[in-house]
Structures are given as C-alpha cells and as structure tokens.
Amino acid sequence: MQNDTDFLLIGSGIGGLTFALQVADHGTVAVVTKKSDHESSTNYAQGGIAAVMSDKDSFRSHLEDTLQAGAGLCKRRVVEEVVRRGPECIQQLMEWGARFSLAEDGATLALGREGGHSHNRIVHAADLTGAEIERTLLGRINDHPNVRVFPNHQAVDLIMDEAGRCRGAYILDAESGRVDVFSAPVTLLATGGCGNVYQHTTNPAIATGDGLAMAYRAGAVVANLEFMQFHPTTLYTPEARSFLISEAVRGFGGILRTVAGERFMTKYHPCKELAPRDVVARAIDRELKLSGQPYVLLDLTHINPDRVKSRFPYIYRRCLEYRLDITREPIPVVPAAHYMCGGVRTGLDGRTSLPGLYATGEVACTGLHGANRLASNSLLEALVISHRAAAAAAAELRSAPAPKTELPPWDKGGSHDSEEWVLISHDRSEIQRLMWDYVGIMRSNKRLERARRRLNLIVNDIEDFYRHTPVTEGLIELRNLAQVAQAIIRCAQSRRESRGLHYTTDYPERDDRRGRRDTVLRRLRQG
Ligand code: FAD
Ligand code: SIN
Image (cartoon, rainbow, N blue to C red):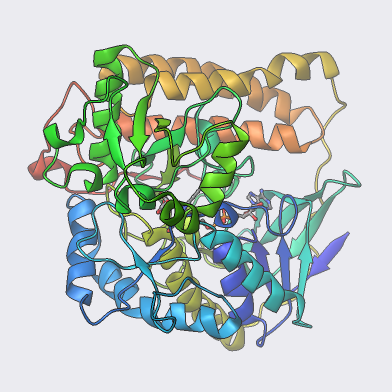
C-alpha cells in the first residue's frame, strides 16, 4: 500500500511535533511514531529549556556559556541564532498552552539554574517540563485537520530515488506486521537519540538511533558521534532503569559526596557541583574507582523539605517508590548515557546533505553543542531548528512540488528462523555491555580497538540474518543499534585527543592544532 502526503515526519517528540504544527497550514502531514504518540525522550525531560528570559541575563552570556561547554567545536553562527530565537519560541509554546512554573510574584517565569550556566535561565514546569511540552503540542496537533498521527508505526528505511533524492520511507505497522510505502516530497527525521546503545541510559526504550542509522545507510553525512554525553546523576537502584535525578537538583543546592560523606567536587572544578556535565561525570567515575563503591551520594537533606517537595514533586515521588525519602537521606547516584551531541549533519534550516530529507532535534547535528552540550540547550535547539526547518520545507514544497509516482514496494525477505533469532537477539545486550565497558566515559586505544573488532562480527551476523528474514520491531532496532555503535567507535577512534565529552587515556590533552574539526562519516550508497 502507498500513502501519499506532503510532509512525512518520523517521530513525535518536541522536534517532530513543533515542525508538524508549523507546516500543517501548507499541506498534509503524516506523523509516524514507533510507540504511543507521547512516548519520547521529550516526555521525560525534567530540568527545562534554557533561554534568556530575564533582564539580568543576556544573549552574550548564554552564547559564551554554550561556546565554553562546546570546547571549541560549536558553530558560532548556529549558537547565536538559537540563543537569539529562544525567547520567542518559549513565548510561542506558552501561546499554544504550555504552563511553566512561575516565580513567587506569580507573574514572571521561575528560572532554574544548571551546570555550566552563569545565570538562572532554565524555564521549567516543576520537574515535568517535557510532559508539559508533549501535552501542549499533542493537544494542538490533534485539533489540526491536516495532521494525521500514526502510532505504533516504525520507519524501517528511507526511500531514495536514482537521483539521490529522499522520496519517503518504508514504514512497519506493528499491529498488522505489514511494511507500507509512505511517499512525500519532504521527509523529516525527528527520531531522537541512541542512549540504548549503552547498558545504562536515562533514555526511554524508543531511543535506539533509528533515524541516524537510516540516514547513514541512505548516504547522508553524519558527524561527531564520539561526543556522547553521560549524565552524572541517575538513581542507583537495582529496581529501576537509570532514573534521572535532574541537574536542577544540583542547581537547587544539592551536594555530591562520597559514601563516606566527603564533598568531592571542590577538588575538581571551581564551580563545584555546577561544573559542566563532562567534568562532573568524570569526577564521579574517578571517585567510584578510588573508593570501589558502586555509587556516590547527592545530598539535599540540608534544604527545607517543603521546598524540595514543591520544586521536585516527580523525583520525590519516584524515589519514595524505591523507599527513599530524598528530604531525609542522600540519593545514591551513578552516571548513565544521556544525550547524543553528534548526529545527521544539518544546517540551521534542518536540511541534511540529501535533497528532500530534513532532520531536527537530537538526531541532528547542527553545530550548536560542539563537543559537549550545555544543560537544557537541546529542547531549545529542537524548538528553534524545527521552526526554521518548517519554514524552509514549506517554501521548498511551494516552489517545486514533487510529482506523485509509484515507489517500489517493500521486499519482504525470506522466512523467519526463530531459533536463529533467539541467538541473534542476545547481541543487543552484548552491544550495550561492550559500549559501556569500552566506549564509555573513559576510553583508550586498546578498549576502542577491542570494541571495534567485536562489533564488526556482530554487525555482519545481524546483517546476514536481516537480509533473509521478514522485519520485526526488535530486528530493526537491533540492526540500527549495531550500526550506530559501529559508527560511534569509528568516530572515537579517529579523534586522537581529549576534548569535551571524548576522553581517552592515550591522548589526555586537547590538541587544537589537529583536533579543532568535526568528525565526519559518510557511507557511499550502493546501486
Ligand atoms: P524524542 O523526544 O526522543 O522523540 C523521538 C520520537 O521518534 C519518538 O516519538 C520515537 O518514538 C520516535 N521514533 C524513533 N525511532 C523511530 C522509528 N524508527 N520510526 C518511527 N518513530 C520513531 N533536554 C533539555 O534540553 N532539557 C531537559 O531538561 C532534558 N531532560 C532530559 C531528561 C531525560 C530523562 C532525557 C532522556 C533527556 C532529557 N533531555 C533534556 C534531552 C531532550 O529531552 C531530548 O534531546 C529531546 O527531547 C529530543 O527531542 P526529539 O524530538 O529530537 O526526540
Ligand atoms: C536534567 O534535568 O538534568 C536534564 C537536563 C538536560 O539534559 O539538558
């Protein structure tokens, strides 16, 4: 079956939905999304959105903080534009119905503080900012007659024509098991990140790098995948998937201590707990190795309990489920994979290197984050770039609407071999362990090489199985995770220095003479 639409959007987080609302007045929009409509990293964002919303703050200061975190690799023009357009995008979200936390005067926005920011500039809805954004955007989308959302529809691969133009995507309907053609002159990747490449991640299960892998297979330029951000503080408990303890907790006065009670960030950075994330994550990693303990502590017990409960109602409630009262006991925390700073290379208008294909949000690499993302700059980036990309895509559609033609149907593949699938499905946890142990916070030539060799074998096995088997959700994700892991290792091996989030014991220093460049990968398309 072929579905024709003007705009095909893959993903229903902040990136996809913001774009959808902007293009919906210019044509028909199909939003395909892997699980339910709100299931996305966006939905779990806690801290908030960074933007200059107070007279005491300035664009220059937000720009400088972003450049400082990015360790010499941010694109200045992109940072300037994203920072400058932040306030109007927040205003637009509020006009669409988003309710953010207010200061005590009940009129101005309450602005939180996070690591690396020299001013309070984090707009938030208590510690449920992302859920508020999803609620707002989905509410508007569901009212729009031009937009149709397809939950439980997973993109398998992009459809490229002979001229190298993206013409849509093959989409698996999870209920029927059928793969349909979705054809569109404009396709947007808004598929989020790839945290599930690692054993421990803050990301929800949907974050398997699908968009990145699809774009790479189609021949798009991808960049800077070695810069994977590890969030310093996730709840340490065997019972929960790495539950995030927001950086805003440290911004609110939370203190990091060893299990023995010693405050340790004073040894590592003048900003102590509010140092940039890479510094805090590495400091925790080092303290864990020094002490042999499995976690460090994040202490809020010196702060008035009522203030803690009212600022962090979600974190307070979730920790109580694990029998931990954060107003009385310090929180055991460990780092976990959190955010992909690299991705599909785009310009400020979300255009990728492939005609007809746009990307926005975490899947994209615009140059805003450089070698390390400043906290709460990702929701901001997704908002600003989606607005700009929507304007560019609508203009492209007006100037050259693509002819509607039949595209080749999906080739079903061979028959399913369930015994082999049992063998192959173990590869997922092997990849995740391998990436955690060898391509994590601290890297070395030896570890990366070991990971590369093992991954090559796994990728070949999966590819062979994939070619002879009808696709399923699990198989699509496994193939993508393996290819993304392989691409991360390639990028990491080619950076022979330590910069931002990439730290290797073989080259512990930053090398500005050779390292001040993006790491770029591009696979040549076959056929
Ligand atoms: P997502 O919101 O992840 O949405 C991706 C969408 O694509 C989902 O709908 C998914 O189902 C869909 N999808 C994926 N693959 C496919 C496929 N093959 N086919 C169809 N659909 C697919 N950033 C901040 O700036 N501030 C914060 O406070 C903050 N807190 C965070 C807290 C947590 C726990 C996490 C995990 C991240 C946080 N981040 C934060 C990062 C930020 O939330 C994400 O970078 C951002 O939400 C990404 O938005 P997105 O639209 O690109 O992707
Ligand atoms: C957090 O709340 O700590 C997450 C903020 C972010 O990832 O930007």
